[in-house]
Image (tube, rainbow, N blue to C red; front, top):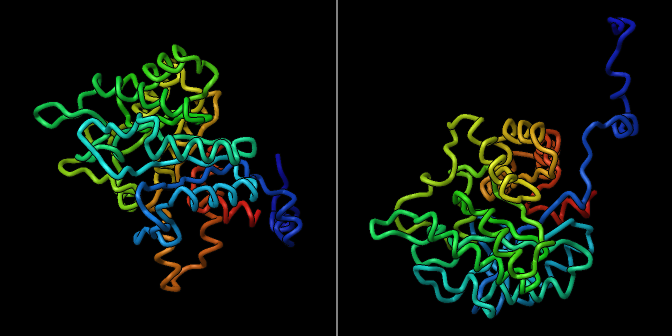
Length: 327
């Protein structure tokens, strides 16, 4: 039984910045943050992403610089997305040992692999000419099981190139199991998998498709990504399936519109839970700030704290280096 007013005055613990800092229940640390980075084949200088101010499609050199800056700021990891010069229906560049993503993984792992974790996004949409996440049937549907074979090959190529963690994002049934088996068979039994377990067919992904040049040429991804209006139990089922197949950590994507999902997943599992503060979340804040409508820095921190408070252990965010320096 607690006291009541006037004896109880909760404002006492909010009176000064030092008091508020001392009793804060949610704390961010630079190591909690993972920075997404894009590297594009065939460009001579970094290319700004128009819908994501401050984000670039990097050259190999500028990618290495960005990774060094992240490491110096204490960021926990970087996740790399590759954009090849040539795309085809099966995403051949995705597992090419000399493809842009594998080359970039070797660069970054050799440069800063002792200072932070180098992750690879394991999917095909950046590499296919149709923009979908897998192999297509003659009718234009994504062939789940044929796609698993490609994911397995891609994950092995990424591991051989120096990836320290792979992150399958395509939402194919059985993808974690297929990747785990392939990695184990190739001698990478100790390489962890961060599964995009609860990834929604979200409108918040729009600017990312500019950055990664992976917008579907037809249709959408609602047949494999989760329905935003779907039952929460569906997300939990996906998480359980991924864990049963060998996932070492799980992810919810997007973050801010799915804080309830993050909380439920955190309550259900005993592995690290990641959340991806996606491109649309980033773009909205940057656009509003550019118009003078919000306090940019405070909104960035408040959004990240809310994701952390919901239960995320790790947060993928395009502000990772900036925020790590501030912390």
